[in-house]
Image 1 (spheres, rainbow, N blue to C red):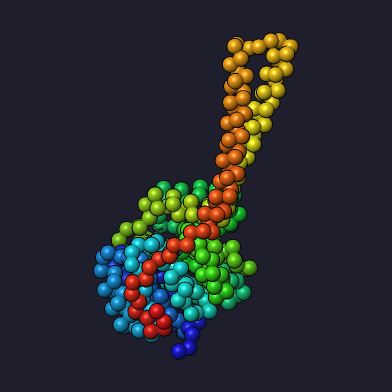
Image 2: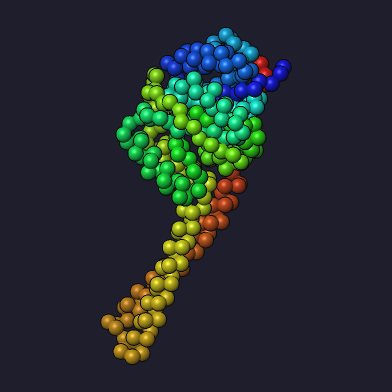
Length: 313
Ligand code: UDP
Ligand code: MG
């Protein structure tokens, strides 16, 4: 069977109310666009009617629609990874199932790829999220850009296009705490960003609460930077240096002026010095553990329970 030109990868978690609409809008855009395509829908352990609906969609278009059912909820980025592993297209596009990213933007993304870019990010025009989400994400963007050096105007928007070689590199990265757009960005040689429309969620509610968003951002920070650990080390060094000066000062004072109140501050100086050294030591150990931790975990990242797929499993 010939490989399609486009692979559309969609993570799906409890989206029963959106799938019918997503299906018809995707099919409509892609059929009219005229390039060969496949749509890979990854069910990330949904507990609503998602599974039945997905199976039905597959039966309607078995050559176009490929379904993967996870054994549990492994997260949006794992669902996309599973889709990437199966994608056969030359250009791979990710989008959300809730129709916040209009499928009608797909041709614009592909156009940017065809203009020579291997990664096309997106910036949401008139972003339809709460005030809190918009401002939290602005703050987070600036911290991330400083700590990781990854420049991404709008990290939350998943409507993105990648060339085959970028997706291959993402798959080859055996990392469990993966943040796909950032990883892909780091492998791309000619990244770009375009503006896309953004809508309100069609049905259901956001699957990200504050805690999940925080965890996602920890993945992003630790996955792309050792700066948090390094700050710790630098802090330890500064404390050590300052307390060394303090010890020297107290020593000289003791010779010329005499002991201060029963030597208690000398004791403080020594304790602070040791405290600084301990912090620094902890920081250095942390540097190593951080690196080892990143490499040694070899747990399976997700478990596939079932697939409905004419092009592989
Ligand atoms: N999603 C998923 N697994 C999860 C959480 C979300 O596959 O554990 C999917 C969800 O179905 C949607 C996309 O990831 O297609 C984005 O989720 P959501 O719309 O809830 O995030 P938000 O738009 O609020 O950032
Ligand atoms: Mg959404």
